[in-house]
Length: 287
Image (tube, rainbow, N blue to C red):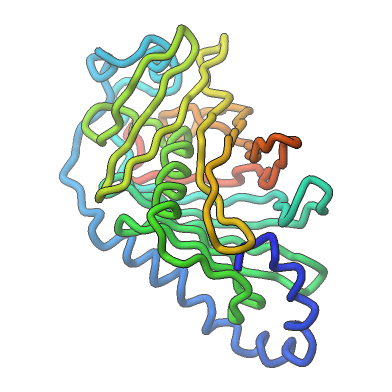
């Protein structure tokens, strides 16, 4: 079942189950922990490189400007990231209400992957736990009422793998050393203000376009991404992410706010908007 249809079953699921599910909530929270462990276990890196201007050679001009602006010379290459987000999420179309969101996210660079563990309060005291992930080369998307009872669970599919890898690639703006040579990103110049990044991993390939503004910051990210329809099939649709409010964190300049949306022929549908409350890197900058 796709997340769009989840509202149609929430009322039925809540009746008679609130006390039982709340008591067993900890059982449903094991999945993100298990995925976190899977993500972290192969991520043992001997990459002790630090950033230098030579790393930017051969990259498209707007990406060189961006990296020169956001990276501090001598900053170690990031191997893993943990962040905390607070904002809102929309389940449904452009007329649907925004719901409170709180999430943690864990990324690794080698191998590429992430686990997004979010709580969305669909009505007061009725939360769902959404886990969106790319781990060991495979996409994962589940939603559970009270962290236990499934209301959405995407079947394994190449389209899901590609969609999640594209998400990972787009979100590298929060750990921009991953854009540098040696992490598998291939670049194609488009014009003076944009370039296409392509990442291949474990048989899956994804591409997104990064748009650099007059301040040498990536503020817009575009792609054609797969999304799951109500009948469980996948469609390719334009997608846009916006990031803003760059600030200095541990030897890098990264956004502190973002919004993402689907761009359908009948109009745009924003579905995530949030602020990054905290972000931590491994290794940390020594400066």
